[in-house]
Image (cartoon, rainbow, N blue to C red):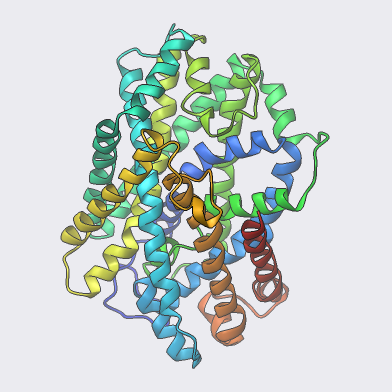
Length: 460
């Protein structure tokens, strides 16, 4: 077992190697935000121009905050609330840092509650494709499959429970047997399926149009909201702000160079997002479908395309298996922080994993209700949030409030509260240009951008 990092507990568990840490943490970052979210958000926002802004947001806001969250975990060596409590005492701050950790734990369960429903639909579609579904289907049959799934609360609840059961099973083992082995199997499999999809789409679809759309410059309305959307997507794809990354940081061995590892993880996360675009958009453009299809791109638009292309059932199975793997590698990191906290309270990992997975399934019923009978139920309409279902409130509450506020808190803790020298040694980095640039970004650029994201979300 790798040793604990400076300031940590020598008995605290850690990943077996640097490679294991990078693979598992990259798996945490790579999730539905990359395969489900990025293509439709890029499509809705015009492609190339948005992608450029997204890259800038990733480089100058989300990635530095990601490294800061990992570093807080490495220094605190505990679940997010306890890790931040230790660091608050070290910094001598009067602010209640553990509150940020507790808020993140709530955020992880809320994200899991809608993740489970979306991932459950991906699993259901993968089974349908394995039986030969989609190939040669009519538009009506594809639309009926989506409508049938989203009109049946028992069906959504069943698949959510299956998905969360798989997540709990992996997390219930110790981190080397569970998280590490799952990451080592699923991440290479995910990358192989994704590369296969890109090659197939490149040969079958309009690859040139997809490349031009994602990387070319087209006329578009550059608004503050576009920048906020890019920053929000960068945060969501990396999973910054809810404590899963901090928990993985606490399992990091002292032999890991954090800046170098962060570079690899962010590069892998970016590669998957762009590759997902190159796997999806060639098929979209060759079929004459609008790239701005929105959230329905994965479960409505793509199946319509799978119905018309050679080997549609096989391609559909590969894609929905890819989506499922991406969801699982992220869901295990989302469940881990609450399980770690329960372990500190004397619970076994198995009991903690079952309890928190069950809670996520119960809360997932709100998302299922929003898709089924509650499409026109807006619980906070009296507060001016008319048109927002339970699902909308949960998803946007996490994305527009918990993620940016937690990210802002992490940046302020690392940039202002902890001593510059402690931060430098924890990374570790030489006191040169690269460290000064990163510390300056965490101290000034990231807080300003995150604050703008939050204000924009509230104003919007």
